[in-house]
Image 1: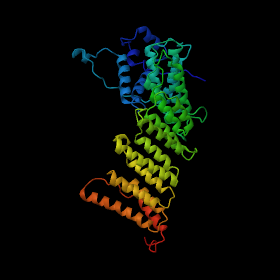
Image 2: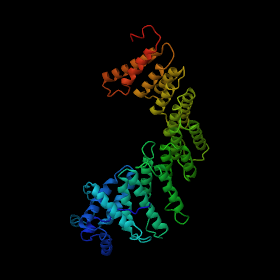
Image 3: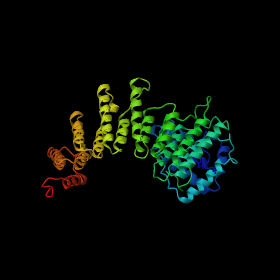
Image 4: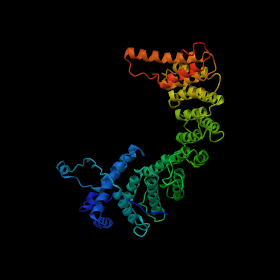
Length: 466
Protein backbone atom coordinates (compact mmCIF):
# COMPACT_ATOMS: atom_id res chain seq x y z
CA UNK A 1 0.00 0.00 0.00
CA UNK A 2 1.48 3.35 -1.06
CA UNK A 3 1.62 5.70 1.90
CA UNK A 4 1.92 9.49 1.62
CA UNK A 5 4.87 10.85 3.52
CA UNK A 6 7.06 13.93 3.87
CA UNK A 7 8.71 16.26 6.38
CA UNK A 8 9.55 19.88 5.93
CA UNK A 9 12.64 21.92 5.30
CA UNK A 10 10.44 24.84 4.29
CA UNK A 11 9.14 25.09 7.86
CA UNK A 12 12.31 27.02 8.74
CA UNK A 13 12.50 29.13 11.87
CA UNK A 14 12.14 32.35 9.88
CA UNK A 15 9.02 31.11 8.11
CA UNK A 16 7.38 29.97 11.32
CA UNK A 17 8.26 33.09 13.32
CA UNK A 18 7.03 36.04 11.33
CA UNK A 19 7.29 35.08 7.66
CA UNK A 20 10.54 36.96 6.95
CA UNK A 21 11.42 35.06 3.79
CA UNK A 22 11.08 37.63 1.04
CA UNK A 23 10.57 35.08 -1.72
CA UNK A 24 7.56 33.39 -0.03
CA UNK A 25 4.12 35.09 0.14
CA UNK A 26 2.62 35.28 3.61
CA UNK A 27 -0.41 33.32 2.39
CA UNK A 28 1.82 30.41 1.50
CA UNK A 29 3.54 30.65 4.88
CA UNK A 30 0.18 30.52 6.65
CA UNK A 31 -0.86 27.62 4.43
CA UNK A 32 2.24 25.64 5.35
CA UNK A 33 2.18 26.46 9.06
CA UNK A 34 -1.46 25.42 9.19
CA UNK A 35 -0.31 21.82 8.84
CA UNK A 36 1.44 22.05 12.20
CA UNK A 37 -1.20 21.21 14.76
CA UNK A 38 0.72 22.95 17.55
CA UNK A 39 3.78 25.02 18.32
CA UNK A 40 5.56 21.81 19.35
CA UNK A 41 4.94 20.37 15.88
CA UNK A 42 6.41 23.49 14.31
CA UNK A 43 9.54 23.29 16.44
CA UNK A 44 9.91 19.58 15.68
CA UNK A 45 9.89 20.37 11.97
CA UNK A 46 12.36 23.19 12.52
CA UNK A 47 14.79 20.94 14.39
CA UNK A 48 14.30 18.19 11.83
CA UNK A 49 15.07 20.53 8.95
CA UNK A 50 18.39 21.34 10.61
CA UNK A 51 18.96 17.62 11.09
CA UNK A 52 18.27 17.09 7.38
CA UNK A 53 20.83 19.69 6.38
CA UNK A 54 23.48 18.15 8.57
CA UNK A 55 22.63 14.63 7.40
CA UNK A 56 23.39 15.73 3.86
CA UNK A 57 27.10 15.50 4.75
CA UNK A 58 26.85 11.77 4.17
CA UNK A 59 29.01 10.15 1.49
CA UNK A 60 26.03 9.02 -0.58
CA UNK A 61 26.66 11.73 -3.15
CA UNK A 62 29.65 13.84 -4.12
CA UNK A 63 30.71 16.97 -2.28
CA UNK A 64 30.09 19.26 -5.23
CA UNK A 65 26.46 18.28 -5.62
CA UNK A 66 25.95 18.48 -1.87
CA UNK A 67 27.41 21.98 -1.63
CA UNK A 68 25.35 23.23 -4.57
CA UNK A 69 22.20 21.71 -3.11
CA UNK A 70 22.76 23.20 0.37
CA UNK A 71 23.71 26.60 -1.03
CA UNK A 72 20.62 26.74 -3.23
CA UNK A 73 18.24 25.88 -0.39
CA UNK A 74 19.92 28.04 2.25
CA UNK A 75 19.70 31.10 0.00
CA UNK A 76 16.00 30.53 -0.56
CA UNK A 77 15.13 30.62 3.14
CA UNK A 78 16.31 34.07 4.05
CA UNK A 79 17.82 36.31 1.44
CA UNK A 80 17.87 39.49 3.52
CA UNK A 81 21.32 40.51 4.79
CA UNK A 82 21.96 40.51 8.52
CA UNK A 83 22.49 43.68 10.55
CA UNK A 84 26.26 43.18 10.57
CA UNK A 85 26.18 42.70 6.79
CA UNK A 86 24.25 45.95 6.33
CA UNK A 87 27.07 47.79 8.09
CA UNK A 88 29.46 46.36 5.50
CA UNK A 89 27.34 47.54 2.62
CA UNK A 90 24.88 44.66 2.41
CA UNK A 91 27.39 42.05 1.36
CA UNK A 92 26.32 38.56 2.29
CA UNK A 93 28.52 36.24 4.32
CA UNK A 94 28.22 32.55 5.00
CA UNK A 95 26.60 31.84 8.33
CA UNK A 96 27.50 28.81 10.41
CA UNK A 97 24.98 25.98 10.44
CA UNK A 98 23.04 25.64 13.70
CA UNK A 99 23.80 22.62 15.79
CA UNK A 100 21.35 19.80 14.90
CA UNK A 101 19.11 18.56 17.67
CA UNK A 102 18.71 14.80 18.14
CA UNK A 103 15.41 13.43 16.86
CA UNK A 104 13.60 11.18 19.31
CA UNK A 105 11.27 8.33 18.46
CA UNK A 106 8.23 10.41 19.33
CA UNK A 107 9.42 13.22 17.08
CA UNK A 108 9.96 10.76 14.23
CA UNK A 109 6.39 9.49 14.55
CA UNK A 110 5.01 13.00 14.54
CA UNK A 111 7.12 13.90 11.51
CA UNK A 112 5.76 10.91 9.63
CA UNK A 113 2.25 12.02 10.52
CA UNK A 114 2.92 15.52 9.23
CA UNK A 115 4.50 14.02 6.15
CA UNK A 116 1.37 12.04 5.38
CA UNK A 117 -0.80 15.12 5.69
CA UNK A 118 1.47 17.07 3.32
CA UNK A 119 1.67 14.54 0.50
CA UNK A 120 -1.63 12.72 0.51
CA UNK A 121 -3.74 13.26 -2.60
CA UNK A 122 -6.61 14.92 -0.73
CA UNK A 123 -4.34 17.63 0.68
CA UNK A 124 -2.04 18.27 -2.28
CA UNK A 125 -3.58 16.99 -5.52
CA UNK A 126 -1.44 16.50 -8.59
CA UNK A 127 -0.31 19.76 -10.12
CA UNK A 128 -0.47 21.81 -6.92
CA UNK A 129 3.03 21.40 -5.49
CA UNK A 130 4.85 24.71 -5.16
CA UNK A 131 8.65 25.16 -5.42
CA UNK A 132 9.06 25.37 -1.61
CA UNK A 133 7.19 22.10 -1.16
CA UNK A 134 9.26 20.52 -3.93
CA UNK A 135 12.41 21.47 -2.05
CA UNK A 136 10.78 20.11 1.09
CA UNK A 137 10.25 16.73 -0.57
CA UNK A 138 13.89 16.57 -1.63
CA UNK A 139 15.20 17.26 1.85
CA UNK A 140 12.69 14.89 3.37
CA UNK A 141 14.02 12.16 1.13
CA UNK A 142 17.53 12.82 2.39
CA UNK A 143 16.26 12.74 5.97
CA UNK A 144 14.80 9.30 5.42
CA UNK A 145 18.02 8.13 3.77
CA UNK A 146 19.90 9.17 6.89
CA UNK A 147 18.33 6.19 8.68
CA UNK A 148 20.21 3.83 6.34
CA UNK A 149 17.40 1.29 6.54
CA UNK A 150 15.12 -0.47 4.08
CA UNK A 151 12.03 1.35 5.37
CA UNK A 152 13.76 4.75 5.28
CA UNK A 153 14.99 4.20 1.74
CA UNK A 154 11.51 3.09 0.71
CA UNK A 155 10.05 6.34 2.05
CA UNK A 156 12.63 8.35 0.07
CA UNK A 157 11.82 6.27 -3.01
CA UNK A 158 8.12 7.08 -2.66
CA UNK A 159 8.84 10.78 -2.29
CA UNK A 160 10.80 10.88 -5.53
CA UNK A 161 8.05 8.97 -7.33
CA UNK A 162 5.58 11.56 -6.06
CA UNK A 163 7.65 14.31 -7.69
CA UNK A 164 7.83 12.38 -10.96
CA UNK A 165 4.06 11.95 -11.05
CA UNK A 166 3.68 15.64 -10.24
CA UNK A 167 5.73 16.52 -13.30
CA UNK A 168 4.31 13.95 -15.71
CA UNK A 169 0.69 13.51 -14.66
CA UNK A 170 0.23 16.89 -12.98
CA UNK A 171 1.88 18.83 -15.81
CA UNK A 172 3.89 20.78 -13.26
CA UNK A 173 7.07 21.97 -14.95
CA UNK A 174 8.49 23.21 -11.65
CA UNK A 175 8.56 19.67 -10.24
CA UNK A 176 12.13 18.81 -11.17
CA UNK A 177 13.70 15.74 -9.61
CA UNK A 178 17.29 16.46 -8.61
CA UNK A 179 19.73 14.02 -10.18
CA UNK A 180 21.77 13.67 -7.02
CA UNK A 181 18.59 12.86 -5.07
CA UNK A 182 17.81 9.97 -7.42
CA UNK A 183 21.39 8.76 -7.20
CA UNK A 184 21.30 8.99 -3.40
CA UNK A 185 18.21 6.74 -3.24
CA UNK A 186 19.71 4.26 -5.71
CA UNK A 187 22.96 4.27 -3.78
CA UNK A 188 21.08 3.41 -0.60
CA UNK A 189 19.32 0.52 -2.36
CA UNK A 190 22.72 -0.56 -3.69
CA UNK A 191 24.27 -0.69 -0.23
CA UNK A 192 21.28 -2.60 1.14
CA UNK A 193 21.56 -5.15 -1.68
CA UNK A 194 24.57 -6.96 -0.23
CA UNK A 195 23.91 -10.68 0.11
CA UNK A 196 23.19 -11.61 3.71
CA UNK A 197 22.37 -8.03 4.78
CA UNK A 198 18.70 -8.85 5.20
CA UNK A 199 17.53 -6.74 2.24
CA UNK A 200 14.14 -6.07 3.84
CA UNK A 201 13.42 -5.06 7.42
CA UNK A 202 10.85 -7.81 7.92
CA UNK A 203 12.23 -10.37 5.48
CA UNK A 204 9.29 -9.92 3.13
CA UNK A 205 8.70 -7.92 -0.03
CA UNK A 206 10.98 -7.11 -2.96
CA UNK A 207 14.71 -7.08 -2.34
CA UNK A 208 16.71 -3.87 -2.32
CA UNK A 209 18.19 -4.66 -5.74
CA UNK A 210 14.70 -5.17 -7.19
CA UNK A 211 13.61 -1.85 -5.68
CA UNK A 212 16.59 -0.14 -7.34
CA UNK A 213 15.65 -1.56 -10.74
CA UNK A 214 12.01 -0.62 -10.20
CA UNK A 215 12.95 3.03 -9.61
CA UNK A 216 15.25 3.00 -12.64
CA UNK A 217 12.54 1.56 -14.92
CA UNK A 218 10.00 4.02 -13.49
CA UNK A 219 12.24 6.95 -14.44
CA UNK A 220 12.91 5.49 -17.90
CA UNK A 221 9.23 5.03 -18.62
CA UNK A 222 8.35 8.50 -17.27
CA UNK A 223 10.90 10.33 -19.40
CA UNK A 224 9.96 11.13 -22.98
CA UNK A 225 11.45 12.66 -26.09
CA UNK A 226 10.14 16.08 -25.10
CA UNK A 227 11.29 15.81 -21.46
CA UNK A 228 14.70 14.28 -20.91
CA UNK A 229 15.11 15.63 -17.37
CA UNK A 230 13.79 12.38 -15.89
CA UNK A 231 16.16 10.14 -17.88
CA UNK A 232 18.42 8.20 -15.48
CA UNK A 233 22.06 9.18 -15.52
CA UNK A 234 24.89 6.81 -16.38
CA UNK A 235 25.74 6.69 -12.68
CA UNK A 236 22.19 5.56 -11.90
CA UNK A 237 22.49 2.60 -14.27
CA UNK A 238 25.86 1.70 -12.77
CA UNK A 239 24.40 1.71 -9.27
CA UNK A 240 21.67 -0.75 -10.24
CA UNK A 241 24.23 -3.03 -11.90
CA UNK A 242 26.33 -2.91 -8.76
CA UNK A 243 23.24 -3.60 -6.64
CA UNK A 244 22.72 -6.89 -8.48
CA UNK A 245 26.45 -7.59 -8.21
CA UNK A 246 26.23 -7.23 -4.43
CA UNK A 247 23.17 -9.48 -4.41
CA UNK A 248 25.14 -12.10 -6.42
CA UNK A 249 22.69 -12.01 -9.35
CA UNK A 250 24.92 -11.76 -12.43
CA UNK A 251 22.16 -12.46 -14.96
CA UNK A 252 20.12 -9.50 -13.72
CA UNK A 253 23.24 -7.33 -13.70
CA UNK A 254 23.87 -8.29 -17.33
CA UNK A 255 20.28 -7.39 -18.22
CA UNK A 256 20.67 -3.86 -16.82
CA UNK A 257 24.08 -3.62 -18.48
CA UNK A 258 22.51 -4.37 -21.88
CA UNK A 259 19.90 -1.61 -21.50
CA UNK A 260 22.54 0.94 -20.41
CA UNK A 261 22.64 3.59 -23.17
CA UNK A 262 25.95 5.22 -22.18
CA UNK A 263 28.26 2.58 -20.76
CA UNK A 264 31.61 3.56 -19.28
CA UNK A 265 34.42 1.72 -17.57
CA UNK A 266 32.45 1.77 -14.29
CA UNK A 267 29.61 -0.10 -16.04
CA UNK A 268 32.02 -2.80 -17.16
CA UNK A 269 33.65 -2.99 -13.75
CA UNK A 270 30.27 -3.39 -12.06
CA UNK A 271 29.34 -6.29 -14.34
CA UNK A 272 32.80 -7.80 -13.84
CA UNK A 273 32.17 -7.58 -10.11
CA UNK A 274 28.87 -9.42 -10.58
CA UNK A 275 30.62 -12.30 -12.35
CA UNK A 276 33.48 -12.31 -9.85
CA UNK A 277 31.18 -12.47 -6.83
CA UNK A 278 29.24 -15.32 -8.47
CA UNK A 279 32.35 -17.46 -9.02
CA UNK A 280 31.72 -20.80 -7.38
CA UNK A 281 27.95 -20.30 -7.34
CA UNK A 282 27.31 -19.92 -11.08
CA UNK A 283 28.87 -22.02 -13.82
CA UNK A 284 31.51 -20.32 -15.97
CA UNK A 285 31.20 -17.03 -14.07
CA UNK A 286 34.99 -16.53 -14.09
CA UNK A 287 35.18 -17.32 -17.81
CA UNK A 288 32.43 -14.79 -18.54
CA UNK A 289 34.39 -12.19 -16.60
CA UNK A 290 37.49 -12.86 -18.69
CA UNK A 291 35.47 -12.68 -21.93
CA UNK A 292 34.04 -9.33 -20.90
CA UNK A 293 37.53 -8.06 -20.10
CA UNK A 294 38.76 -9.16 -23.51
CA UNK A 295 35.86 -7.33 -25.16
CA UNK A 296 36.73 -4.20 -23.20
CA UNK A 297 40.35 -4.46 -24.36
CA UNK A 298 39.34 -5.13 -27.96
CA UNK A 299 36.92 -2.20 -28.13
CA UNK A 300 39.58 0.11 -26.75
CA UNK A 301 42.22 -1.12 -29.21
CA UNK A 302 39.82 -0.62 -32.12
CA UNK A 303 38.78 2.84 -30.90
CA UNK A 304 35.12 1.93 -30.49
CA UNK A 305 34.62 2.75 -26.82
CA UNK A 306 37.02 5.57 -26.03
CA UNK A 307 38.03 3.93 -22.76
CA UNK A 308 39.81 0.79 -21.71
CA UNK A 309 40.17 -1.44 -18.68
CA UNK A 310 41.83 -0.05 -15.57
CA UNK A 311 43.41 -1.64 -12.53
CA UNK A 312 39.98 -2.34 -11.03
CA UNK A 313 38.93 -4.22 -14.18
CA UNK A 314 42.00 -6.45 -14.17
CA UNK A 315 41.95 -6.93 -10.41
CA UNK A 316 38.31 -8.04 -10.48
CA UNK A 317 38.98 -10.67 -13.13
CA UNK A 318 42.13 -11.89 -11.36
CA UNK A 319 40.09 -12.18 -8.17
CA UNK A 320 37.46 -14.21 -10.02
CA UNK A 321 40.14 -16.58 -11.31
CA UNK A 322 41.70 -16.97 -7.88
CA UNK A 323 38.34 -17.96 -6.37
CA UNK A 324 38.20 -21.07 -8.55
CA UNK A 325 40.86 -22.65 -6.27
CA UNK A 326 42.33 -24.57 -9.20
CA UNK A 327 45.59 -24.74 -11.06
CA UNK A 328 43.88 -23.63 -14.26
CA UNK A 329 42.42 -20.61 -12.47
CA UNK A 330 45.82 -19.64 -11.04
CA UNK A 331 47.41 -19.93 -14.48
CA UNK A 332 44.71 -17.75 -16.04
CA UNK A 333 45.06 -15.21 -13.24
CA UNK A 334 48.78 -14.91 -13.95
CA UNK A 335 48.09 -14.57 -17.68
CA UNK A 336 45.69 -11.70 -17.01
CA UNK A 337 48.33 -10.03 -14.84
CA UNK A 338 50.96 -10.34 -17.58
CA UNK A 339 48.48 -8.94 -20.11
CA UNK A 340 47.88 -6.05 -17.77
CA UNK A 341 51.62 -5.41 -17.44
CA UNK A 342 52.11 -5.47 -21.22
CA UNK A 343 49.28 -3.01 -21.71
CA UNK A 344 50.82 -0.64 -19.20
CA UNK A 345 54.31 -0.92 -20.69
CA UNK A 346 53.35 -0.64 -24.38
CA UNK A 347 50.61 1.98 -24.14
CA UNK A 348 51.78 3.74 -20.97
CA UNK A 349 48.29 3.60 -19.48
CA UNK A 350 48.76 4.61 -15.87
CA UNK A 351 45.27 3.44 -14.90
CA UNK A 352 46.18 -0.10 -15.95
CA UNK A 353 49.43 -0.33 -14.00
CA UNK A 354 49.78 -3.52 -11.92
CA UNK A 355 49.73 -2.88 -8.20
CA UNK A 356 50.33 -4.76 -4.98
CA UNK A 357 46.71 -5.94 -4.85
CA UNK A 358 46.83 -7.63 -8.25
CA UNK A 359 50.16 -9.31 -7.45
CA UNK A 360 48.86 -10.48 -4.07
CA UNK A 361 45.80 -11.96 -5.78
CA UNK A 362 47.97 -13.96 -8.20
CA UNK A 363 50.23 -15.20 -5.39
CA UNK A 364 47.17 -16.20 -3.37
CA UNK A 365 45.68 -17.93 -6.42
CA UNK A 366 48.75 -20.16 -6.68
CA UNK A 367 48.65 -20.84 -2.94
CA UNK A 368 45.07 -22.15 -3.23
CA UNK A 369 45.56 -23.93 -6.54
CA UNK A 370 46.67 -27.30 -5.15
CA UNK A 371 49.38 -27.46 -7.81
CA UNK A 372 52.68 -29.19 -7.16
CA UNK A 373 54.36 -26.06 -8.52
CA UNK A 374 52.41 -23.65 -6.32
CA UNK A 375 55.41 -22.69 -4.20
CA UNK A 376 57.70 -21.93 -7.14
CA UNK A 377 55.01 -20.00 -9.03
CA UNK A 378 54.03 -17.94 -6.00
CA UNK A 379 57.61 -16.99 -5.13
CA UNK A 380 58.32 -16.23 -8.81
CA UNK A 381 55.41 -13.76 -8.84
CA UNK A 382 56.80 -12.23 -5.65
CA UNK A 383 60.24 -11.72 -7.27
CA UNK A 384 58.63 -10.38 -10.44
CA UNK A 385 56.81 -7.74 -8.43
CA UNK A 386 59.95 -6.59 -6.62
CA UNK A 387 62.42 -6.78 -9.54
CA UNK A 388 60.51 -5.64 -12.61
CA UNK A 389 58.01 -3.19 -11.14
CA UNK A 390 60.07 -1.81 -8.25
CA UNK A 391 57.31 -2.55 -5.72
CA UNK A 392 57.94 -3.39 -2.10
CA UNK A 393 56.18 -6.62 -1.22
CA UNK A 394 54.10 -6.25 1.92
CA UNK A 395 53.11 -8.73 4.60
CA UNK A 396 50.09 -9.97 2.62
CA UNK A 397 52.25 -10.91 -0.38
CA UNK A 398 54.85 -12.68 1.74
CA UNK A 399 52.21 -14.54 3.74
CA UNK A 400 50.57 -15.78 0.53
CA UNK A 401 53.91 -17.02 -0.82
CA UNK A 402 54.77 -18.73 2.48
CA UNK A 403 51.32 -20.33 2.51
CA UNK A 404 51.97 -21.64 -1.02
CA UNK A 405 55.21 -23.26 0.16
CA UNK A 406 53.51 -24.72 3.24
CA UNK A 407 51.12 -26.61 0.93
CA UNK A 408 53.81 -27.73 -1.50
CA UNK A 409 54.76 -31.44 -1.63
CA UNK A 410 58.44 -30.66 -2.26
CA UNK A 411 60.93 -31.88 0.34
CA UNK A 412 62.52 -28.44 0.70
CA UNK A 413 59.20 -26.60 0.98
CA UNK A 414 59.66 -25.87 4.70
CA UNK A 415 63.17 -24.51 4.07
CA UNK A 416 61.86 -22.18 1.37
CA UNK A 417 59.04 -20.98 3.63
CA UNK A 418 61.45 -20.26 6.47
CA UNK A 419 63.78 -18.49 4.05
CA UNK A 420 60.99 -16.04 3.16
CA UNK A 421 60.34 -15.50 6.87
CA UNK A 422 63.99 -14.66 7.51
CA UNK A 423 63.92 -12.32 4.54
CA UNK A 424 60.98 -10.44 6.08
CA UNK A 425 62.77 -10.17 9.41
CA UNK A 426 65.96 -8.96 7.73
CA UNK A 427 64.14 -6.22 5.83
CA UNK A 428 62.41 -4.99 8.95
CA UNK A 429 65.70 -5.00 10.92
CA UNK A 430 67.42 -3.01 8.18
CA UNK A 431 64.62 -0.46 8.10
CA UNK A 432 64.77 -0.09 11.88
CA UNK A 433 68.54 0.43 11.79
CA UNK A 434 68.33 3.26 9.26
CA UNK A 435 65.26 4.79 10.92
CA UNK A 436 63.10 4.33 7.84
CA UNK A 437 59.76 4.16 9.64
CA UNK A 438 57.25 1.33 9.77
CA UNK A 439 58.11 -1.92 8.05
CA UNK A 440 55.50 -2.95 5.45
CA UNK A 441 56.50 -6.61 5.53
CA UNK A 442 56.62 -7.24 9.27
CA UNK A 443 55.88 -10.91 10.13
CA UNK A 444 52.58 -11.61 11.86
CA UNK A 445 51.11 -14.57 13.72
CA UNK A 446 49.85 -15.86 10.38
CA UNK A 447 53.40 -15.80 9.03
CA UNK A 448 54.84 -17.88 11.85
CA UNK A 449 51.86 -20.24 11.83
CA UNK A 450 52.34 -20.94 8.12
CA UNK A 451 56.05 -21.67 8.61
CA UNK A 452 55.28 -24.01 11.52
CA UNK A 453 52.68 -25.75 9.35
CA UNK A 454 55.28 -26.18 6.61
CA UNK A 455 57.73 -27.84 9.02
CA UNK A 456 54.99 -30.09 10.43
CA UNK A 457 54.50 -31.54 6.94
CA UNK A 458 58.20 -31.74 6.09
CA UNK A 459 59.86 -35.15 5.67
CA UNK A 460 63.26 -33.75 6.69
CA UNK A 461 64.86 -35.42 9.72
CA UNK A 462 65.12 -32.23 11.83
CA UNK A 463 61.56 -31.08 11.13
CA UNK A 464 60.37 -31.76 14.70
CA UNK A 465 63.08 -29.58 16.23
CA UNK A 466 62.26 -26.76 13.84
